[in-house]
Length: 307
Ligand SMILES: [Zn+2]
Image (tube, rainbow, N blue to C red):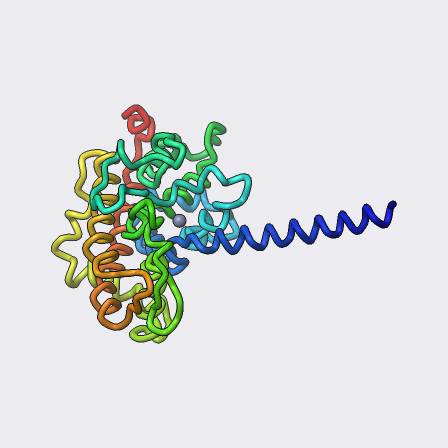
């Protein structure tokens, strides 16, 4: 009897392990702006912080990252399927109606159960308003401001990844299986990571710092330097996130989905024409994250909290 129970329990454990493995494979299938994309967005942002914001960010980060925001910018993707953080899972993207090629906050910013604001545009506003309660030297127990900072920094990357604002049925291109050059991939993952990895391999000696240097050069003294000031134009945070999401779905329609069918092979032509968009979106995510953090942590937090 005891032995039988033992066997059953082992069997149960084995079954549980298989289920866990299966769940983690499934979870891995739904991708997000890669480690490289998030890291570069956060590095660009941290570099552009004014002194008050730079100080607040360092103050909120845990000691083990030595003041480096980018070290934690991928973290929300690592925990989104943990039981404790399951609530955060719908906050990384927006599902728009198939073929609509537009973003409408009230129509689109909800989770699959219809709960309002449960999308990346809603979450950016929520975490930003939490951070408005930051005051150095006090611990506001209503919120975990360290987590709010990390989620905001991550999600500013996600809202700029065009396929994170994509069609509902294909899950932002996740179900559009295809080949990237010679290996299997899907359209979402092409925009999350493949384009960046191919660029690093072909043009930047597999060195992310060299790619980042080029992206920075483009907006400090290069092809985007004339319009970089317009990147931060918007009248309210709600208007800002609406603008970012609208830009993403527009790029997703014109450059992501267009002409792509399941089973296609995407190669040089697709890569070379889309790489500039990927680089620009990383830059815009970083510049705009810095803008938000500079505003939130500007002196007079109390005044901001009331608005
Ligand atoms: Zn994400």
